[in-house]
Image (cartoon, rainbow, N blue to C red; front, side, top):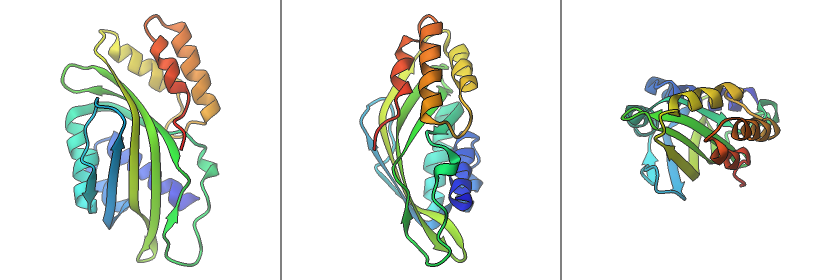
Length: 195
């Protein structure tokens, strides 16, 4: 578990904190990133190959457009499987729901999205690395309301980072949606996207 959890946390740290150099500690040099989008509110290339290109797509280019980002794995850290002691892989995790809360650099609009990660790991030398990541984006809402920054802060403070249990997510989103005028739309993000 520790190696897989550490790699997922490294990815989140790199993307959310705009640290492209961290990607090399997470992804294999030959890794492949793919996307499927069920929304037109965000654009990514359908396929990116190699850790350097993945760092550009997921960190540099992403960070140029969005900031104040927090991406949550809707899972408990302890639910990840132990890393195999023998063999080189590949090892694929069960699909993992995610939630993202961020703001656009240009204009400050709030963005809340969710989807599913599909992670595959291989050994590179003696270390586990991500060899493939598929990101499905099921929904991405964009709100240009003057309250965007306050809403972002409220949502991010209501959720433990970066791991949030589905029960905690549902309760937090329901509480926020019911307690703040204008946040009723947030209730839809309380239900993790299925695999």
